[in-house]
Amino acid sequence: MKVSLVFPNVGKHIHEETFEPLGILYIAAMISEGHSVQIVDAFNRKLDVQETVRELLAFGPDVVGISLTMSPTTPFVKNLAQRIRETLGSFVIVGGTHATFMADDLATTPDIDVVVLHEGEYTFRELLDYREGRKRLCDIRGIVYQHDNKTVKTDGRPPIKDLDGLPFPARQFLPETAIYKRKHILSSRGCVFRCIYCASSAMNQYQWRPRSPDNVIREIESVSAEYSHTFYFADDNFPVNEDRTISICKGIVEKNLDVHWGCLSRIEFIDNPDLLDNMYEGGCNQIFIGAESGSDAILKKMKRNYTAADVKRIVELCNHKGISTTVSFIIGSPYETKEDIQKTLDLAADLDTPNVAFHIFTPYVGTPAYVNPEKYGITILSPNPEQFDKNTRPVIKTRYLKPEEIMEWYCESFGVSIIKGRQGWWKA
Image (cartoon, rainbow, N blue to C red; front, side):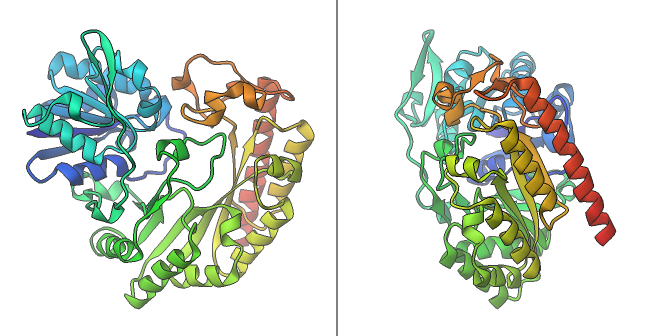
């Protein structure tokens, strides 16, 4: 059977960074034995719907799977599904974060046949078995579809426990591997926190699951040998388990792998000089830190176990250990006053790093803030989550801030970013 997997585009790109579409690469690896696979990465290659359809037509797939993780890609996905139905008549499957939490709406879309909930590797493979007549649709766990004009939701599929049992992402199916300047490795799935603006915990059914250090190191060996010596750990928080992190870093050293990598982390996980020493020796040269606020009162309300002073201290510690940092903040969280945002801008300006980033608080689908906005004192102003984007405009008002005020502070943050960047240029 011919299977096309599509990573959809958006209306407008906000940056030029490219990243591997790990979700469909994992699915490609699961189904490549026994099926012909095509990957169309419309996002990173900046293909429009017509160009995407043209590539699909050249391959002639029986089944098309579309990743619908980012809400702003939804219009592209719906348009593409309609074009596929008109030109190819292929069986269309969608999955991903947005698809999981908007499954009932998507299942009623005439051009979408099945919506996959949560992780898709085993579910997608079983859907191919269904298309080949070896399985009944109603027996496949973790899907939503229409039958006799009624929405059917099958029994839930639990999170995959043995991540070591999954094949490595099938990067060989990417037609233009050179465009991905930095490869991604996912060493664990899920998050141990439940931030109100993040859907990762719910998407992973509130379970954090790590791969073993040996399994991770084998993928690092494969990626560095075949593709790149530079990569990024795509985990929500890479150093969650200190012993595991150190084991991975020591394994890299023992294997004498010449690699350089970055990761994401919260402040709580990297407040240990010995851990940072091991990370640096294992090739870590950058950590992206989600600090979120410079106000101690806001950090406490966000259930953060650190203060603004801790953020400054950890950035300096990372610098001392030879690891650069990018520190990210949120503008317009439900608890913030103007005074709190000013403290955030002041902290960002004072940090010993040229790399600071700001985003607008945005209640994406699946997040606690989207599910229960009243609990957090926010009003969601836009009825269409497909248009939500943390980098363009606010879609909420809070107890303390109107949307235009949030936007003013967000624009103010640009000045801080520019000044910090210029400081970095002069130091360089």
